[in-house]
Length: 322
Ligand code: UDP
Ligand code: MG
Image (tube, rainbow, N blue to C red):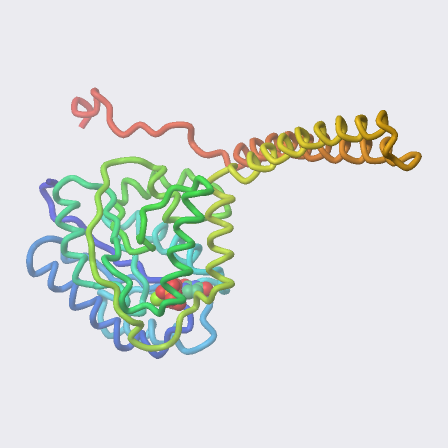
């Protein structure tokens, strides 16, 4: 446990949330005050809203809140950049000013009181604490089904994510400073944060219904998030093409034998065997080649991201220096 109480920034992306913000903002502040009164976090802790180019009065509300109470802060993006980018902007903004961040949606669906457990885990030495949903009883069957398929698809495609964890998590500024070296532009935070390493754990909570307003994650956005998640974390789909190419090539080969047999036993129209053989052979070879080229493109793709190859978390000579 560190000797001084850590400064906490609660980072909250907001997009067209004028209905729910006036209700949830005081809830976040209350939780912050509670944690301060219990001496778990420093008095300099803040609630940081990121306005993601809202088209309603969200930004005015945030400005109003921050003039009322200095514990509210806000940053405004120049336009709507989506949940992940907005969250990243907030985290990068906060990392210089605080010791720990907790990211959470502003709709009150995630149990705010789980923050206390998260901060306690930080005091126990964890640098990342994932908030994991206990149940999905409050979701509709459709949402539950699509969300579960989303996690299954992600893990099947080789993008490892913490099951039933969205973007409610505690991340220390130390982890965020390392994370700043991940320069890629397609970001999928819940899949990328585990890549940084460091000690982590999970806390469990119940997810409630949205307090007001409506979800900004319809099926189309969820699909695009899943696609981003897969393509930014894994080259497995490309590998599957290579596999498919191999299988097709194999069956084409069998087909060629079959046409030859047909030709020699005399059961064919003139020209059929040669045409079939050529089509089968080349379609197999083409798919195989596409897969192999794809494999290389996958490698180039990962290279252009220029992720750090390793991260040093500790050094034996550190203590002498400080
Ligand atoms: N959000 C955002 N930019 C967007 C869409 C959503 O900052 O383009 C924010 C939104 O204000 C909320 C969070 O991301 O705080 C999660 O969105 P939502 O609650 O609509 O998603 P759901 O919980 O239904 O998956
Ligand atoms: Mg929500």
